[in-house]
Image (cartoon, rainbow, N blue to C red; front, top):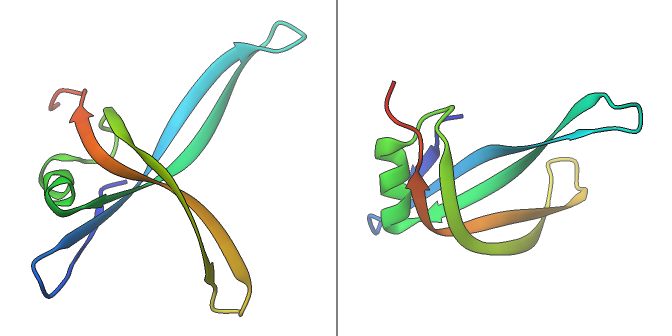
Amino acid sequence: MDPEVKSFDNNRKLAKIAIATNETYKNDKGEKVTDTQWHNLVLWGTQAKLAEDFLRKGDEIAIEGRLASRSYVDKDGNKRYMTEIVVNEFLKLSLKK
């Protein structure tokens, strides 16, 4: 999906992106299986602005960052846990179509 970008009063930006990674392997029966995992990325400042300007759904990217875990209370009062990748840098690998 395209980045979801929020701007704050001090001209600071936050971008959130969900990306998929695929692993393909053969199971015990020799059948090809693709396992897709979804990951939530968080980008701040300049990286958020670059993501807003240059990233679109379907782009291939390489990222460098750190894992961060947090918790929050949802609208029903349930405590939820989330692990995100806080991106320090990204490189767009796909060419414009």
